[in-house]
Length: 310
Image (cartoon, rainbow, N blue to C red; front, side, top):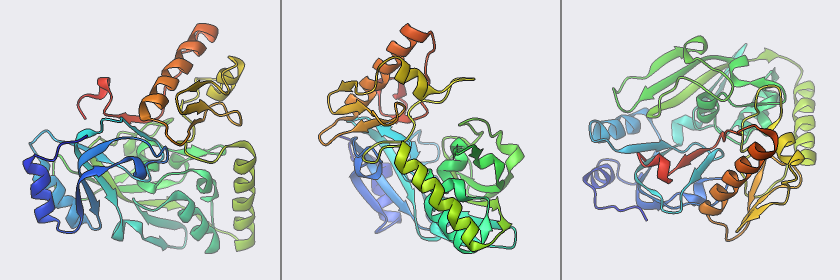
């Protein structure tokens, strides 16, 4: 359990009254629904709130985790000493323009895709099946159905909690976007993003949305999971390698490799984060032993032994 006997947690609670929860559970904020606690959870509603977080923590060496929608995150059962930040309020707004859509970093990608389609703005439909936020999508260059954020990102606005209190506009080309990678630093918060879109008939946009939703329901499991666990190795599919190794249905405690999509790990009721982590490592070991390929997790894993800095 995360301790709360830290000056930074008390100071945050005092300066951001009503927006800070001490010794907060993080499991419920992740799509795995597992994990421990954090010293302080800040629900930031404005850029001003983020500036306060930066002022309090700067120079203290305190670990900061921006949670987003929690869809690509595994928090250890022991939690971590530090601060978690979620985005709401002004960070959940969407503005539709002629050929772009601007969305706050806390906007769910599914909401962004549907609202854009309803406004007759095409090109963002692929985001409907990505279970994350705008900020998280920019941070990891998320994507699906043959497209990624880098294909539509015009610019992102970020605030680095560790170095200053100014929001900086960054072009897509400056973010070094690559497969599940960007140049955004750990303490940098994506406050909003501008995405390219095109004017199209609403019914055409919404038909694309419906087709993507239908495909994902047919091919991917629901329940407590974080989507794809491993990045695809060059020229191959992580799911194919896991399936070929006969690992669908493989279980550790309450965690199991999905029999619907082998690159998904399900957390059943009562599962621990340690179960999910152990299953990830076992899948890595068996695939490497059989196929000679070391799968790389795309999950952000917090509070485990090798992430002791958190």
